[in-house]
Image 1: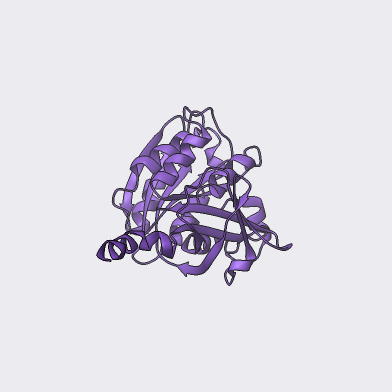
Image 2: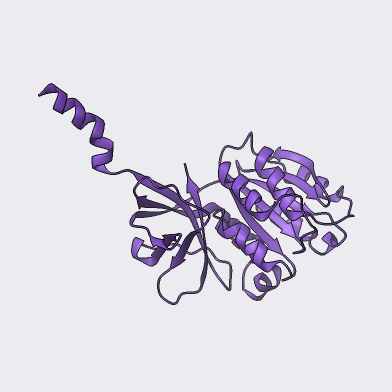
Amino acid sequence: MSWLRGLLLLLAPALCGAATQLLVTVVDAKTGEAISGLKPGDFNITDAGAAKVIEAVEYKTGLVDTMLLVDASLVGHMVQPLAASLIAELGEKEQMGLVAYHSSPDLVQDFTSSKQTLLEAVSRIKFGNDPRVLDAVYATADGGFQNATYRRVILLLTAGMEGNSRVTDKAAVKMCRKNGVSVFPVYATGSERGLMRMLAEQTGGASFSIRDLGKATGKPAQRIFEAMRGHYIVTLKGNLALSEKLKVSLTGSRKALVSALPLE
């Protein structure tokens, strides 16, 4: 019966059941505060309308490697002053790089732990041309994280306008998913609110309206970094090939922004 024993060994992974994991970020829809303490029954996950079985949920906090994308277009001056408060939240052992984007993205400062170096880099940004947000996200996700150690985050500081990028929103999301990058837009206006939310929802990030952040108590930049550092690892039953139609939401009436990034 040695052949049967060998067959059982080959089939063991399938018999035990494979699993798929998601990195899920959940923040309060009004305050932007990270929401912890959720259980498997608090989540509802579907892909192309088909419900997925949740096996486990674990909340984790950790360090982040951040590429700060600063809007350097003709309207970017309205958000540039916020860059300093975001840089101030950089934690010990964490790194941040700086990209100024307009009609093209320009790497102004590679990864560094020096807040002073980052502030000096912000002061060198010159403004002009249209804000091609998607081109900047795509290029940064594609080549900006070779030296990253911790969670990969694009912190997108934007006036909230998109200036006819060469790449599509789907292409930008696909590149982020390929390289395990989450997008956290921080925007000033509502003209591209849907785009900002989509970039976050499809990559495990969260989107923040500067106006809404100002209505809540506490430091807005601190809440943003808490959301970047805190996330759930959600384990789904089965070895699944998840599509762009993946949807993650909370059960009940709690208003929250929920996003997911499939993990390889």
